[in-house]
Length: 108
Image (cartoon, rainbow, N blue to C red; front, side, top):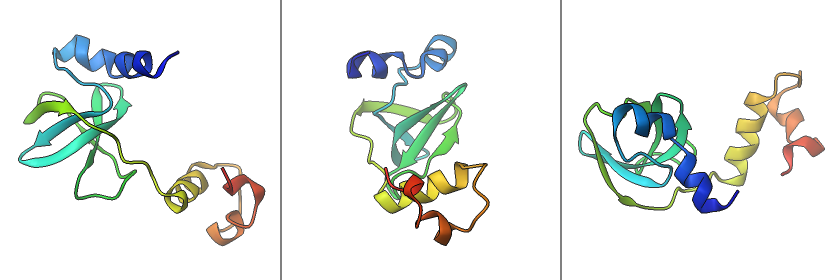
């Protein structure tokens, strides 16, 4: 799957159901706050606001006070943010975050 095809296929449910031009990478404005669609969240759009850290994503309803703008680039999580997210999502690891970062699993 090419990068273009992946972007085109994301948020397909939202586009088809609500008739909005939602795709990952599309800039938006919500109540005057600028942001970018960073994740497909099913019937919501996952938005990273410009004032938030990369990787912080909020769910928005695609038609509630969202203005769709031009395309942009999604900011990537930092390495430490990615490691902490992986630790939180790992349901089989029974140690602390300090233990986690000492393992081979925390390095990607």
